[in-house]
Length: 207
Image 1 (cartoon, rainbow, N blue to C red):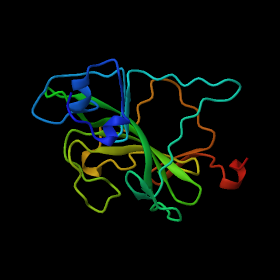
Image 2: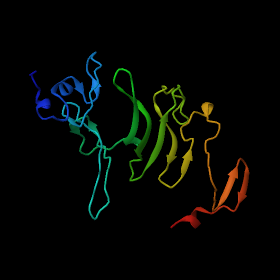
Image 3: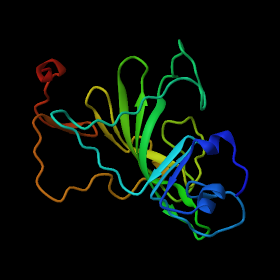
Image 4: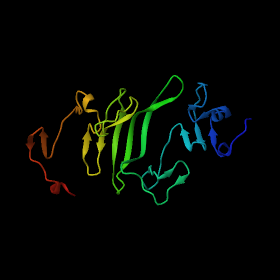
């Protein structure tokens, strides 16, 4: 049996053989070997990563709770006790990846991302990789690679819902919003400089 580091000693592997643990970090190959291994349950202390087939969150008399809580500091073991995250820092994300012929996961293809404004409020993005290089709308002209997830839809802290939030203005889809059904608007609709209906004042919408 190969020598094991202290981190490996405290790692856990269920449902696969020893080679799957020693030769790979979860589902990513460490060398040229492209043999594919799956995981039933793996905790890898080297990377602080956990891999499971499926996950059910069940609570009794209380809502099930999954929370992302990002601490400032140096990954993985040196939190900064009195530090603060940068404004608009990405706190956590839930995403889906594809699978390559080499047995690797792709970058996120679609992802829900959660950001903090560092003042007790935050915002959420529905993001997707476009498959082509883009220049995000609010990123100072930075060129984003084809596999970077771009925030196309944003839910802001004040209830605003922004479609096309960071979509490249030069690569807009034919329609940013498609509704297959009825639309009801309690307020006004503004198209360019023309307003239809009666706008509600912000004060009138406060709860």
